Image 1: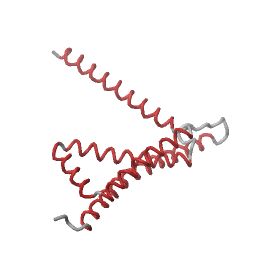
Image 2: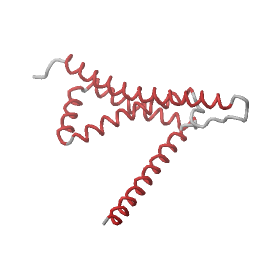
Image 3: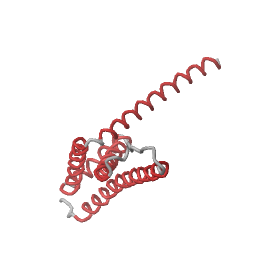
Image 4: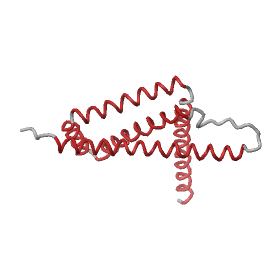
Length: 161
């Protein structure tokens, strides 16, 4: 019995590791694609347009957005979590893409064999960590400001009769 269970657990762990590696490869390819300026501008246009449409819908139709939110979360709370994750992801990737305009060599540094290459690598790693941190903060701020704007617009509008 123990051997059978161990074999099944090993197979599960192998599948899970393969999924994790595939996800890491997908994320790496998306981040590497941003090193090309044309792809970066395409990302910015798509993410900026999507974010602008979301913001405009909250500004123009706040009651409809709130009603849609309640309808979706009444069906299943996982749908609400997925919507929040999508809003967060759009804000995070948009912020990261903006930083990639300023730092085009963020992910693939080209350090030569020089005297201070270790120091330069350390500074570059710190810069990359800070950019990702600010990208996450940008995603969180996008979601929080949308929620605050939604609540402000709902409370500030006269109720339909």
